[in-house]
Length: 182
Image (tube, rainbow, N blue to C red; front, side, top):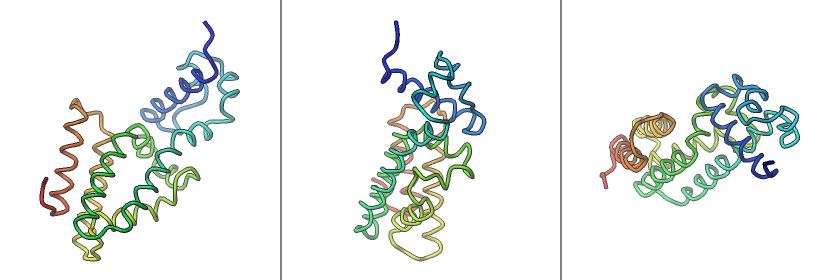
């Protein structure tokens, strides 16, 4: 039975996400994706102009949500900003686990992708929120530690239920940021 164009497109995206996350963007060819999906490379190219177009479609929602999170955090201050940043980052990184893994696989090639917001600026705004708007070097270091731990842990293939990962990421980040644990 022939697959609908929508179903084929979704299969291509799912396959590409999985392959990019395990082999890296650079380590995955269009032929690899086509073979995994069970279609000809020409069929894949009917749906996506190239490998970059597939990656763009995979990263755009995560990039948009990351920028939206930074905007939501902008009016908050102190512990309120830090707590909201932790909750938002944990939720975002868990929803987009494969995308985080893709970014980490080829980080140097991923950071300046047009489908992502200005990553340096967004990260700086998130660090500022995690630090509770403090400019103290200790607060900034703790903020970087929390951000990095959230992303690295969410991308790991842990044999632990997602609810446990989320709860422990929140508690661990709160401890790292010297916030009262809830």
